[in-house]
Amino acid sequence: MIERPGAFALRTLKGFRANQGLLLAGAVAYYALLSIVPLLIVTVIALSHVVDQGELLLTIGRYLEWLIPGQSQAVIEELAGFMAHREAVGWLLLLTLIFFSSLAFTVLENAMSVIFFHRVSIRRRHFMISALLPYCYILSLGIGLLIATLVAGSLQTIGQESVDLLGRTWSLSGLSGVLLYLLGLVGEILMLTSVYMVMPVGRLSLRHALIGGVTAALLWEITRHILVWYFATLSQVSVVYGSMTTAIFVLLSLEIAATLFLFGAQAIAEYERTEDGTDEESEEAFHTD
Image (cartoon, rainbow, N blue to C red; front, side, top):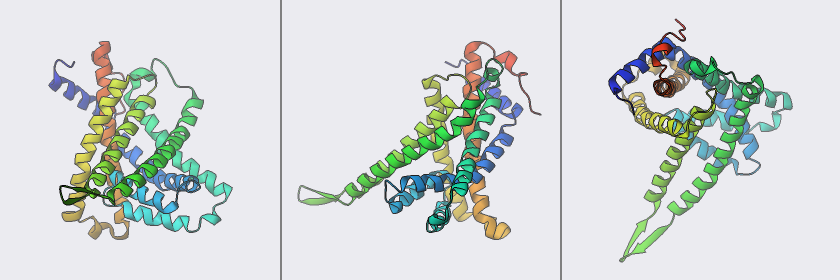
């Protein structure tokens, strides 16, 4: 247990600032923007051999809204346009897409190394593991998307049914919507938890990773609803940026999400130092400014 939560929160903020957390989040968001479309293209090309392409795009659009609220439709349209000419994709272009898909994971691993510097200074990860880790995540995301597509299809089928009870007919569409939402929330928590566990050097306890994953997911749920409201009512970005508006919206959403995620990682790192009794020494352990 943390005996002084206020002091712990202040130390976490100081550590996040010392590690240039906002700069790290900006780097992660930029490379995520570069990676998101190639990653989706590679995933749809692979899974369309197993699942209907339309169902895949529908599922991607639904859960992409969680990552880039209000802007998923533009990305899906670009993805559908590319897939309409998929026969033009050669091996060289496919390898290029796979490479760009991995950039976000590589930068995220480097950002986590800065935050968990106290681990890196003790042990280092073999370069082959670092090289293969992004592609393992791409494979895992593909499998997760396949499962989500199959489950979502079943839940949508349930939503079309109704139940006759006490002389009244009750539609199951509401239940289907709730279950689809919970499916996305659980998937988000599991993904964040896995990143907290795998990306830092060494082994993080499942309890710490799960607490971080749940906290980051709930904070992002609140934030993304605020972003949807802001983009729909108050934002004047389209007046300033014109045709670049979608890219700016996506980049802003990704940076806020990356900031919340990395701040959660900083909190986990500070908690580790507190348990190890090294919190006083860690304040000067690594500074980028």
